[in-house]
Amino acid sequence: MEVFGVAVTLLALFAGFGVLIGLLFGFFGMGGSFLVTPALMVMGYETDVAVASGLAFVFATSVIATLKHRDLGQVDYKLGVLMIAGTTAGIEVGKIGLHWLQDIGLADTVVSVIYVALLGGIGVFITYTATRGGGGGGISHDAESEGEADGEDIPDIAKTIQSYRVPPMMNLRGGISVSLWLILAVAFATGLLSGFLGVGGGFIRMPALFYLIGVPVPVAVGTDLFEIVFSGGIGSFLYAIDGAVDLSIVVPLLAGSALGARLGAAATDLVDEDEIKVYFGVMLLLGALAVAIRKVGEFADIPVLQTVSLVVIIGAAALVSGAVVVSSVRALRAETEYTTTTAD
Amino acid sequence: MFGLESATGLSGAALVIGVVLVEAIVLYVGYGYLERLVGPRLVEALRGDS
Image (cartoon, rainbow over the protein chains, first blue to last red):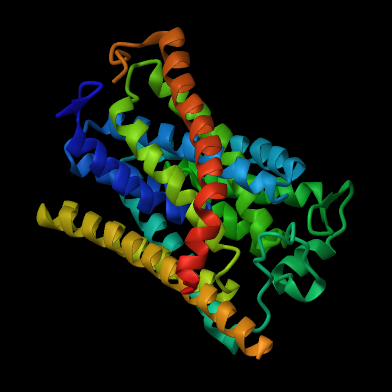
């Protein structure tokens, strides 16, 4: 059976996968192309179609998620525009560096090592800080709070960065004040890595906004999504000029992910902040492991490791999204028990 | 899909990305309506309320 010339089973498969991806995207503000593009490539799609369709999907998902975060007052447009400017410059410089490494034949090895080190490093750091101290010192992730944070919520490194008061100073959502130059420097650095590694960069930018600039997590997620609307939109448009965007992938994937993203965004209102950070850290660690396995497979010419890599990525996504759902349901039930006990 | 397999060039790209953008906005509004309609009942069911 076919709908619009596409098999119903394929549409259902993409829609189901979309729900999983959307849940993670709505919850963490990242995880689109990181999971979708490798999966499409393993399914046998051409690389340009996988990349282009992944980008178009990320663009559409971030439009929906940004609208949702905007409704909750969690998008800092001023910070978003500044980040776009700094990131764009960083991406261009990153591309130049990558081409230079390609010319001397070291690009693949260097990029793989940086990818694994970065994903693994951020994963270890986030997991460590989330598990340290048994839940104290984290910031509120209340979706209705409009991202206001008090002084105790701001990480020490962000406080140090904010102490460098080089004018002009920018007042950001959450009541924080940071030098324009420091915002642009952080944006440039994340753009540099993004351009160098060929990824959307949400997994770099979101922690950078929180840990380096001190933006509250809900606003960091919303602002990161706002930026992805532009980078994903421009990227997918450029690929679509060559006809590489496949709507039979994007349309069902988006239908599923829009639902998942709504559930993921709602879950941020229920699940404890430290639990969120642990999930995020574990997913990055598994992502680093998957990239390492794939590269070892390429180096040692063991094709089965490509499949193992995909299983680790999809398994990590399923595991973490499952944990988000379970934690949300537990939080809801704990609320009910608390209300019942108080009433008694 | 939708007969846009051969859409290329600037106008084709605008059409394809336009379809994706329109779908995103329709889904945002549609799922938003659905959430308001069945959300409270779903939350009650997940809470374990009868």
